[in-house]
Image (cartoon, rainbow, N blue to C red; front, top):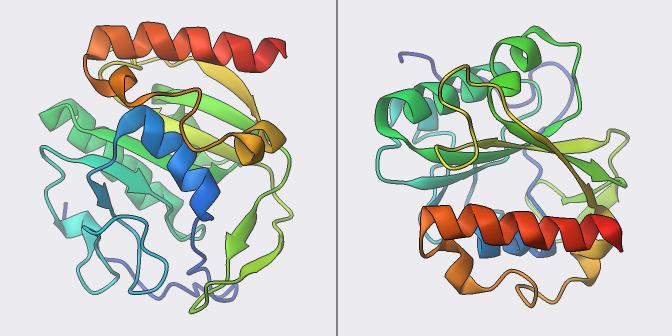
Length: 201
């Protein structure tokens, strides 16, 4: 893929907002990320990360477990890249994006993954700062491109619903223990059970 990451502003203001730590850690407990692919020196969530200059779209994601909070004006190329890396290398990528279900990339790429809807609005990390912004006006979804979570035949995914307040209240892994990522089959089963507990509370 020869695409590059263009101006993050993209005509709609600075989009270089970071993921809040509590939110990242919640999903890190499930997947065990090995790299943050859209980050900078301040907002990176893993010690291994790619910046705009590194251009994640030009990198190989093979043998990685990717956390991806892309600039929201450039979701399509990252979704395409995540799907490409899944199909070529079996790479797991977890993306956070606004719930723009009417867009072409949602139809062409994101519906080929598993989708977890987040109830509640997230406060992201301000660009160039460790402080949090006000609530984002959009509701968010977690998009999971993964051999363990996608049906590789027709590539249709599943839908989950997660409560943002429960993610905030969660004690960084008390529910999702490290062993859930030890073996793919067990990971799916344990995660399914955990999600049932979350949605039934």
